[in-house]
Length: 255
Length: 285
Image (cartoon, rainbow over all chains, first blue to last red; front, side, top):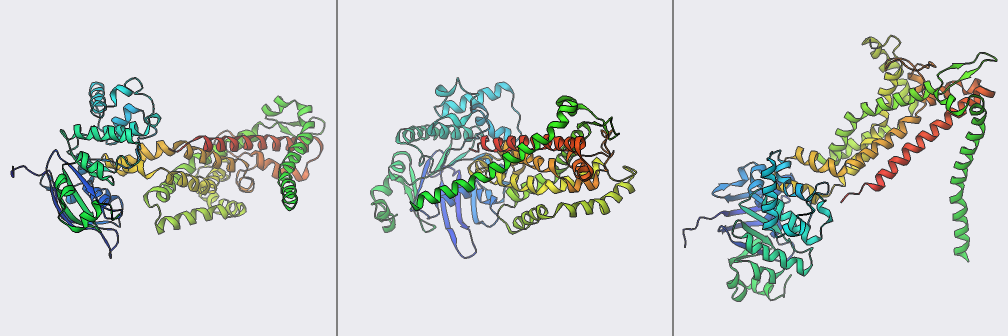
């Protein structure tokens, strides 16, 4: 049991937007492969900030500093090239945003075309089919692959964005409130999908929806004011939280 | 009651501008009519004769239409390599920084320089350089005018393009970065395709500005009334021939000049209309 090699490890990870204030403070946690970890906490607690540190999104903004270590398969990503990290760590954002100038087909393959990686026609077809099937979108769009991705419904667009991330065969998938812009039915679809995806990828999901965290995740983090207050099995945390702040949040008296 | 008066005044003042515009068109058409009637509309457009011999006067607009189109097209080509980098610098690479604000202010300042100043600079600085480089013996001509025109339209193309580049949603750019794209790839494969048609339309509007530019072109184009043989030749644009000759023209010649003015007006209005339609139709997701 104890010998499972962690896929991701936070070691005293800190993120600061300005010199004076730290948005994420000394977070340490070990993530096991093929799990879904929910990151919860009130607005402004640093959960998205922590998530975005994992694929070096903060490197795009010169004022943001990330300190400590984040190990991906034992290697500190903070000293790796952002491009290499981002190919191994996919991300799905809050608002579905397929590339508006690309067809559904090309959206799935956009990770390759953006990186200038050439695939043969058969490889392309296979990748598109594999990824759209794994997000349960294939049957709905297989006849309109050449249409623009922006014609799809919000839920379909978000699944297309997940397919786009999966196409790069990432080790870790980061999801930043992926269902907050979707209706309940589309949300249920995505949640179902995540259970399936768990087999191939490790998922970290930021969510405001406690029901969602309970339904899909095996591990949960609770963050408050930049600190990781509690991290453990989701079930334990919801039934028997250790920290008083977690208890207050989970019972809906905070946030 | 008060509301009603307000409405009437507002309506009346708003109507003044379209009325004036209509009046200008009416005056142009009636005054140009003599030339069109004398030479025939199509003949006037395609004739390259411009001679004032009494009794055998021949006036045709072709050399000037060619001159205008050549200077404008060249100015556009010269302007792209200067305005696009400025637009990317201000709208993407250094978006929101102090240095971007300084660069965009300086670029905008270029738009405020009176065209006579550009003309003087072109005449006394650029023309000798063209001569020293042996590009053309007289220094003035289509090329010289186009180079200065290009500098003059850079601020228009650059500041509009920068706005459109800024409008590309961050979601899309971050989405591309999250897939491992580099900045250059994001610009080439996301920013340009998404903002592309609007960037194009900003160049169309810049063309609209170059078409009618008079003073600078008159000072630099060399003022010869024949079709330019190459880009280093001298010529005349539609605006410069009018500026050169309106003072000493009467009767048929004056009517011909006004006819050229009408054609220039129509071309410019058409180009501006296309630019505006393109901006409206190009949606940014």
